[in-house]
Length: 432
Image 1: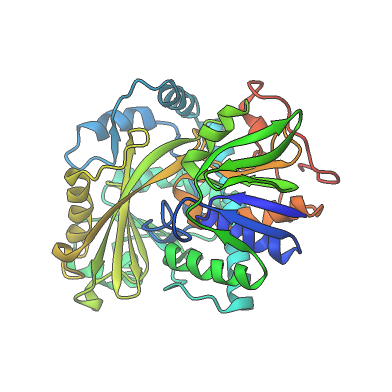
Image 2: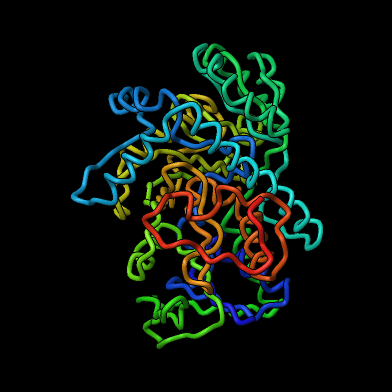
């Protein structure tokens, strides 16, 4: 089957690789000059199935009010005259209850755990390298209230069979020795030992080369204008290089997916939430993190990537605005220097931002649409790197007529109600 994938971020590139591995004729188109140059470029570096958690949860509205008053706030809202922004916020608030949180987290963990397993197998099969480490994630709590609240997450982790360990301060320093230099700044942590780290951009570039070896064609510098449709099928994608045709199309444009989909009557609540990162050169390896430390107070991830520290965080709801704000850099610098004061030179750090494609319930949208030859792989939010291989493999299996190895419940766009026409399921694929 001839397949065109729209988007060459980590999601689109992983989709291309697994589809080509399944024997399909795959072309990827992207406006950038190479793979992984937008949201996949400078993310926090975490591959964190155990930390696959929806932002919408019980108590979040009250926390959000508090966050908005903090100097180093993890949340920034820049109101816009944009109905999609306000609809997304309201939908997220509607998910801020215990039932929705547990349901959404279970869906996210299912896909994220599977994705980690697929990535491990991919690494064994290909030897792909991307500054990877397999030393877990430490969610670090600065207050007793945060530590006590971790039991809500650990119950879902237990039910999902995800390994975890609650640690006291001494336990935290066993896994992250540099934290011994800042005693008294944390009361404990939640260790997720099976999580990994790695440079998403390096991975995406390397995977694109592997995909090319399987016959995938990457067409860069191609701007996408719209999709042409006929009844229940997409007939082509119109670009500044002309109309491109295929048997099947995969939408993997991240935050930009809804803009094209609305043109053909598909409405999914994916909205851009801007995240920031700094990349800090390591000056004292013994004072740097060994893996990933998630600073729970500021929602900042501090990750070791080779000879660099990647510090990522902030949720800025501001539409498609890509301006860099100094206050967000100040927050990232504060978190890393407060916990790892000797690890790196923040004065030499590079500063970056990207648009995370967020759904209001946290789970991405992977699967069929009302058009029988259009499939979605978008809405992964902060977990695109974590979920990329699993999402790509699930999609490749569906398009190849194979039942995916995990349950598909809750992954499709039809979970958002009756605003859209019913999806057209691929032959032989069942949701359960």
